[in-house]
Image: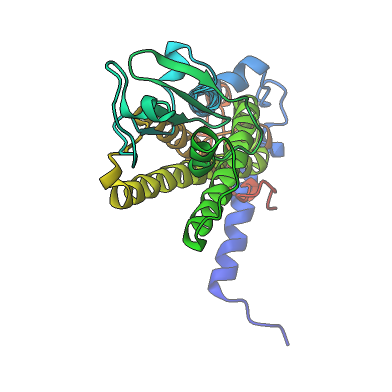
Length: 325
């Protein structure tokens, strides 16, 4: 007794047989004059749209890399351009210090007390200076740097003497250190991965199978950039809010670096758009392997064959790149 064959299965088998009979790669075109022959120029012409999109995603990572480098080198020296790039700045020029009397003309309260007028933070160090002179000194660049304002005040006011801090202050400093070091690692890693992504993105033109690891790599790079930017923005905004709330009576003016914040978000946006584009190339756009395997019909074959040419559904590749027979 034969097993029943459902109509859907019978229709699928008939479609497969009919498709194979009209396939550009089947024996129908055994004549060499009708055989599909593609040169490198033909493949480039048939996949130019995918190539342009791949190059565009590569360009987005170029933009990402440029702004990440600016984030890396910001606040490293007292030069005008680099000195204007900082994450956070504290203006203590009008700080109220108990017991300070007989202020000298031309000196700010901070300078009279032995402090600098302002302190600003970068990724690798901090810089200090006076409002009328600008940045006068910067600390040495340090791996895994984190900004400790309490230690700076102790060093300049108390000559580095040990001070027992309240548990609340110690907890806040631990949070700042953890967030700063996490941000440092993510920004540093995303700069390196963005550089590699510039050269990897154009390779997606060859195959959707190749697009999978490239898309995952670019997504990882974009996520690291986005998370680092989120940590940076959140941490410094919270720090600013806390200083305004608890140090307002001391006339301490905290501010978040607008230029640095804009640079980080531009880098994050470009990286995310590039990663989304690479993810889309996993399933969309004709690749060179599509032409070679017959999944897509090139323009040259359409012009060579007089009869209407249809793409062979029997050779359609699944999204991970294998050919279904």
